[in-house]
Each structure stands twice: as structure tokens, then as C-alpha cells.
Length: 88
Image 1 (cartoon, rainbow, N blue to C red):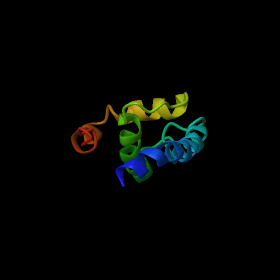
Image 2: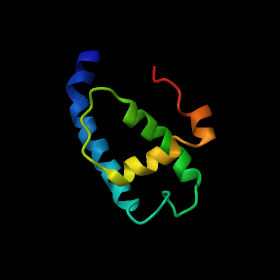
Image 3: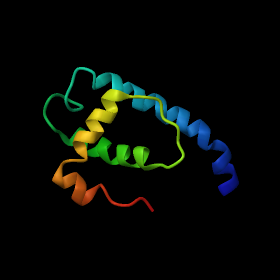
Image 4: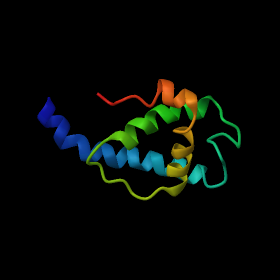
């Protein structure tokens, strides 16, 4: 199973990358995902973004809007307390 996962991993990265690019485009005109206000959407996708940005050895294309949004999330006390935990 582990060997198969290693083979398929690059394919999964490409697929997930396409989804993050959609969000990057969405964030071109917004401070947060739904609007300029922090919502549940930011909380949910922030947890996924933590994992995405926390994966070592993964090449990611530049997505400045996504990176800016994620950077803002990491400064929030709730994110630090409940989401920004070590990946295991």
C-alpha cells in the first residue's frame, strides 16, 4: 500500500494543486474566502491549507493570493491554538 501511495502521490498533488489555484483566483478580489469578513469557510479551508503548506518536499507553484490569505490566518489566535499543530 505504501509503495502504491508513493507512486500516486504526484498525481494527487497535481489534482489538489488545481483546486488551490481556483481558490487563489477567488482570493484576488477578496480578503477572505467568502468576502472581506472571516467566515466558517476560512476555518475549514484553513485546516486543509495548513496541511498543504506543511507538506515537506512538495513543489508548489506561486499562488500569491492563497499565500497572503494563509499568512493572515496563521496570525489568528484560534488558528494558532486549534489548527497550527505539528503534522504527524
